Length: 239
Image 1 (cartoon, helix red, strand yellow):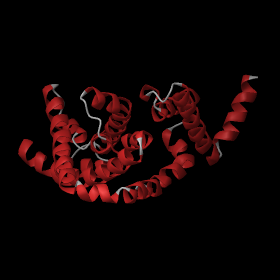
Image 2 (cartoon, helix red, strand yellow):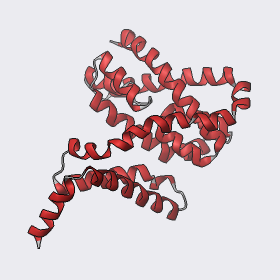
Image 3 (spheres, rainbow, N blue to C red):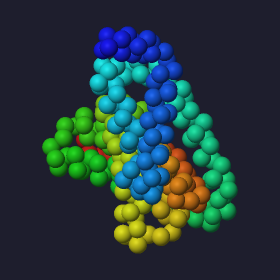
């Protein structure tokens, strides 16, 4: 029986559709659990999907490169999905115009704080310079963060892990933490989640409401630009 199952797995693993199917099924299961839990952010569907896929790849001995061959279509869709964030932003354009100065100041301060705090905490815990440089752009979206990390001498792979963890933690704890701090304005909530936890946080903000989602998407894009400017300056000052 085990031999038959192994043969079936070898056959299925050769198909690029398997990785894509596993990715979609894992996320749908995570989304189902999330809704069953009353949209509790602790049951984040992205976190569930990541853990489930890592578990499956580990027990089957499948390397990431093989998995990515089939799942790269999802990766490709990240671009159109990011562009689609312009739709809720356009719908809230009147509010963005009224708050433009506050948005620019908030994003700039948030970008500097995110990078500086990552470097400071890592330094206090005895991290190497390479690790510090890898952690610095953690709040920017993954492609931008990895590019910045490579340019300043960090490890893009470590940066990618830090970015994903930051996004998941922000999506899980962001709304609750902001609520404890008394932040009830949807614009401020979205802005904070977009700056701190990029795309994953923005996905969570969209579930809060269209206003929060629009401001989060805007903050994510502006933070990517700000981080590209801030990190090289901090590197010169710190290192």
